[in-house]
Length: 153
Image 1 (cartoon, rainbow, N blue to C red):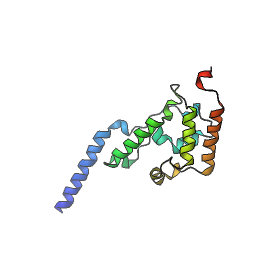
Image 2: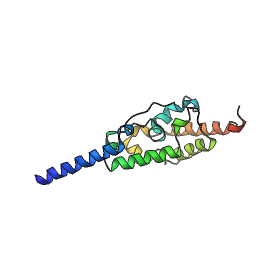
Image 3: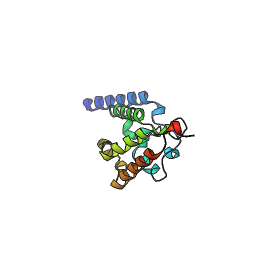
Image 4: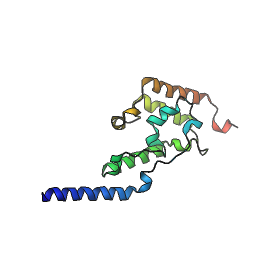
């Protein structure tokens, strides 16, 4: 019985430490501009469902993201995702997708590296159909046909 109490106390302490480290900001879903300013209307829902949780400031932090050591892994993965590609910057006027970014999206979803398999296992809704992958790659073809930013007025 003592072992069980010690185990529960240790688990509680780890939980509190994990919560203290993440703080309120880690669980707040921040409203941000949508990426549809630069993504066609048919593509926006696909990006929203499969990409925005890690690649925008609108992360929906699940309950298990507050329990160490899972909390550390999830925060690291989201930070890496945002550093690679952050959709939040697209709609607020401070950035927009480059042709290279759109090509990388097509490549990543085509080869199955995005969304990652581990994420898809926990979030089935993020799994992309072959039609959605094709749609994202057609967006890439459209983006390549557009003039570079330096030539746009």
